[in-house]
Image 1 (tube, rainbow, N blue to C red):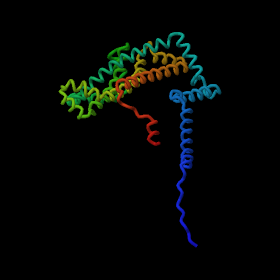
Image 2: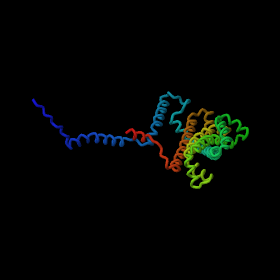
Image 3: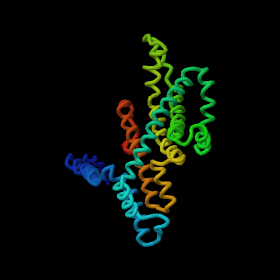
Image 4: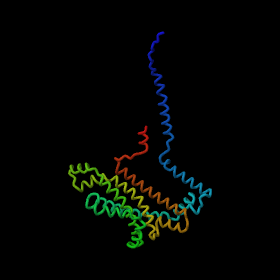
Length: 297
């Protein structure tokens, strides 16, 4: 008996098209379904807050969370409405914003000047860096008594305390950014005929700008923390004063309103810095989780 080898027949074009088309259609339909089911980013970021508020309200409604311990979200919203209607909350926000803006401006100027002195000169670094590194480890509570003795209990010690809190993150980040400037950029600037002032203006400051904006973002958060301590210095206005008065009257809903206002103002300030980053640094593309997913695919 003789076995004859039969050549394998190549699959027809129609068969290949049918075989390949099925996974592609499934993949395409799955991708389209994910796109249709994709929740807007703004809503997705608020989902955690909504869950916390719902659990908080449920605990208060069932009595597991005593009102004397913490008011419900409805009580907090009602207290916020009363404070806004009476004009107390807008006045307190205005007083606190004024202190933060003045202290932030003063701290930014001092921090930038100290960073330039320390980053552009070896002698300046020897004179400035060690004292600044020592002072930045001193807690706010330890500085308050001295500020009261030196400057009294008016607005000046409050502004100075905020300025001190702002100065240190600005100084640390900007001085680090200056030291990380690419020497090749400096040599290129010298080749183009730039003097020392031109190098600082066009090369060093531009290269260190990302680090400076990072320092500003950190400084904004520190400024609100410093404001809490500052408004403990015999304040008669501001969010901290409103919160202290509510503490004496055991009004937990008003205290929560003040904390929410602090958080919202801090978030707003951070958004402002993010916008500045996009305007001043359009060339720098930020990493997003979608990039990692794209690489994995």
